[in-house]
Picture (tube, helix red, strand yellow):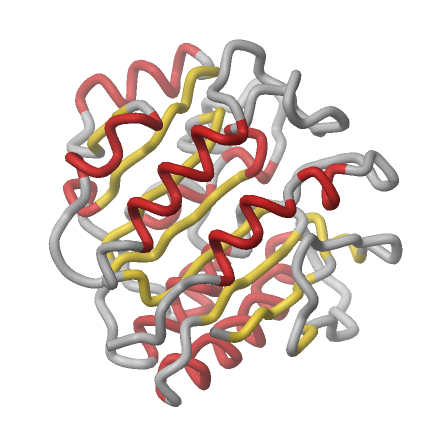
Length: 251
């Protein structure tokens, strides 16, 4: 296991980034001029290189960043290392918007849709990311969906389940475990950027993460630290962080 810190929210550096895990490596390049997606493509190319190196060496990379779009680099890195992962995606939100459906225009609302071949394609194409089959994705919780996301998921092959149903919903083969911490109920985790009431308690999320790791099939972990700087969330997440650092070495 190797913790890789990516102290960015989208293409913006996070000088006060406070991850709940001590990193063994930090990926923080000076990004080129250009559009946000061009800048993120440059960032995620370095993330992909770091992930591929870990996987090739038999380590499980745990990538800790400020948002969910870093997953593009993680999955690209797995593919570069010859791994075709399925995805288990814990999130209070769907992250399946497109530029056409998003009312806010928030770029962090599209990465899961990008992983399965939709939404904005400039960064995935730059990375050489091969789209995943929708049927190879399990979306966990996702209790706060915009209407276009609900419409898409109603006909998508992406499987959905609650936090307490994860163990029975896991696909076969290697798994990329992605956890956006806003899956936790905001009463248990104050300071979230996008809090969604009515979620599972932190203890329930930790138990579900444990059940995924127990399969021995997790080849990479992503932890999206989507909280306000100085909120104290990193300390509160110590238990969940401990579950992630218990990830076994890749087979």
